[in-house]
Image (cartoon, rainbow, N blue to C red):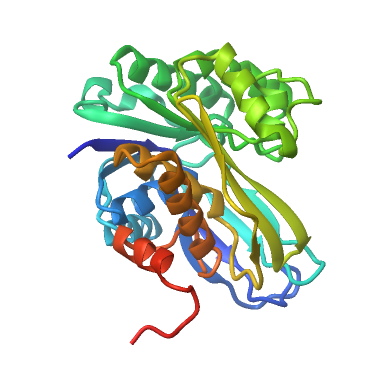
Length: 334
């Protein structure tokens, strides 16, 4: 079985109930998640051997985060202990025309202040067949702008395919900082989750081409610049309201472009982690050697189902997704 290594920060998430504001809420719902941790949990639930690497303080809250990963059978032996605090984020759930709001409190977290050489790098990458990391981890701190690059170089030099989700977060760093950190690693990637804005901002694709309605041409241009990229993928989301979105999946896989129908998501229970669910579905399809059509169909089913449950990831198996695909999608299962 192939061994997947996902590396990043897992955080505590405090979220309001629907209809409550952060300014007047008297209680919060607690979950644990983060971009790479969400992908790790989903892929593990799909039957893959997944290891998650991070650093957490030696506290009860950190132990609870690890137990959340263990529930999905994710190996956490490469999670280091130390530092003073975990990262936290607060989610104010939107409703109707009021959007959801995320507030990060992750400065000086254990992973933000660590040195990557606290890991034994040879041990970290031993027997790894796929390395997954995102631009969010690059943005954790100024030193991680460089640490992220170094880790991808280590994987690349070991001939380990690298999966990267650009996941640009303007609240964490500037576009100029992100470009300086991310653009140099593009020639080392095998798989990349990048939307039309990423195509403009990081791959220097002309805005007249990098548009939602021209993604086949856009991905073709990217693949000419970076022939190392075996797959490019993303979702196109059109927001009618916070609880009513249209979602479409797109995939460029080894020179062939496919797109899914537009699906209406109404109502949306929780869209946080929807992109991670889609990325996990694509990576699962790649590892299982699915056809492009089946791969995209599976990834879309995973993200659509994620939107129906609370929390950062959805605990379902490959069989659960396939059964949903084969059903009409609404009847009671008895």
